[in-house]
Image 1 (cartoon, rainbow, N blue to C red):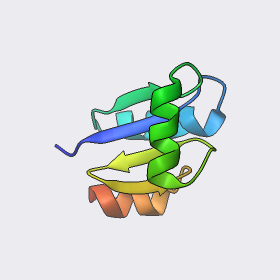
Image 2: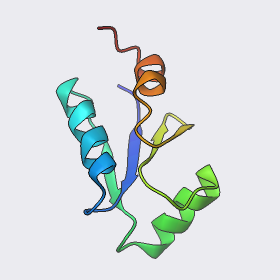
Image 3: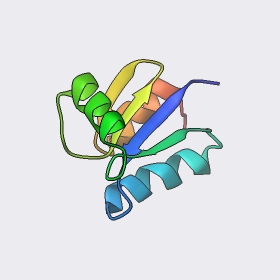
Image 4: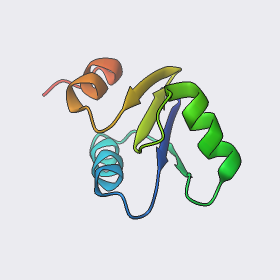
Length: 79
């Protein structure tokens, strides 16, 4: 199982979409709320160069936004 971290905020609709998408395919992930964890927010910025969410870290591969095609490719999701 890949190690997946989702950097998100509770009010971000795309964050909810990406987490629902991962759940649909039974992928476990760590959900990091960057609105309350300043250190983890900085970690996200350092990894991605982005301040916007969602940011996914899948085994060290950074995906910015709900980029379904890139998520599918990285996780080997076939439809």
